[in-house]
Amino acid sequence: MKVKIIGAGLAGCEAAWQLANAGICVELYEQKPEHYSPAHSMPTMAELVCSNSLRAAGLENAVGLLKEEMRILGSLIMECADATQVPAGGALAVDREKFSQMVSDKIASHPNITVISEKVTSIPQDGYTVIATGPLTEGELYEDIRNFFGDGYLHFFDAAAPIVERESIDMSKAYFAARYGKGGADYINCPMTKEEYTAFYNELINAETAPVHGADEGSVFEGCMPVETMAKRGEDTLLFGPLKPVGLEHPETRKLPYAVVQLRQDNTEATLYNIVGFQTRLKFGEQKRVFSMIPGLEDASFVRYGVMHRNTFINSPNLLDCYYRTLKNDKVFFAGQITGVEGYIESASSGLLAGFNLARHLNGAEMVDFPITTAIGALAHYISGGSTGKFQPMNINFGIMESLGKKIKNKKEKNLAISQRAIDTIKNIISKG
Image (cartoon, rainbow, N blue to C red; front, side):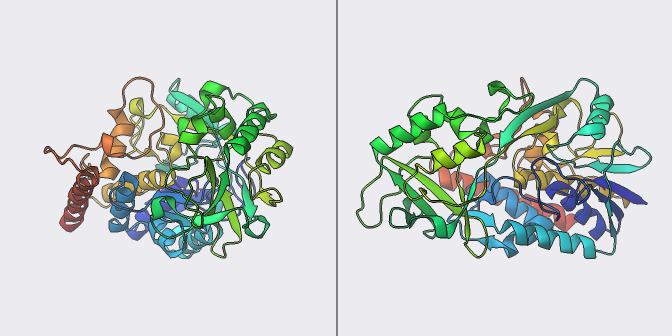
């Protein structure tokens, strides 16, 4: 028995790993390096297109819990992320090139996985298949998926932030610090006075944007909103978002800036830094002009400008079950951001769950319906029917998990209690085999 997995992103690689480790032969189809989407540039698998951050690491955060659950379940993505991490305060960030290469090497060397460099144009329905082609699915396959589901197909747009060379940042104006001193002083902070912020703001909201076919202001997902779109909501909006200065006093003067632009390390060598929260659809020349107004970035060398691209997802509550299996064909599974999970870790977790349960099914065991007391289960249940109203992409959060049933006033303590319950549940599931 062979399983075909279409797409070698985070979800596809995780699904392949789970199946292969369970003794199932996998054919993993990846269109690179013969064909690249508008947002991809590396020939390796599990490419991180936007940020290099996998977000919060601690168990007081839902995404931190999801990471820990995945580690317990034998996640390839978490193994590689932990091995290639770079300093990021209280977050888990990785060297994107080393991370992608490590995933690729492990996949390529697994005896039960055959990697096929080929662009797939239709859903294979002659056997078990996992579609993990990601949010940039296009062309003939896009049309075939739309025809497969009928009218339950949606799309939105998101954007990536620019990356600059570390040596081009003027550190006489910028400083290293972490918000509230949490973790190491891993972020470069570019402080702004009120006058500097006002000048920057006015140029940002009036800068020329690049057209994106089919995009409009209402189709941008809130979690990946271009910085210029956010700014147009009001002059103070950025001060409560990516430019929030709270907890970032200057280490020498101990004064709180009016606004702060943060940059996060993007590679192990610390030669590249990305501008946090600066996803954008500004034209490249405008990015250079406007972002160079930020103190410390006047002479910044941009190795990658921000880009905006289409993200596609299916109306999963009407189309998938809690195993990420399609209701239309029980041999066809979907995984990754195309299902409406939002975020790197969430995408990988959906691939893990799909691969884990498909492997159990093929090996004659009962599939596991992970409960909503776990992060991985809560996300799967939300995607497969837990949302109300118009379905929108979802990050993992404690709000979609089952409550403790008792009151704990301290939020951190409450979240840690939820996390411990989830970890115990996952360990119990594994122990039962």
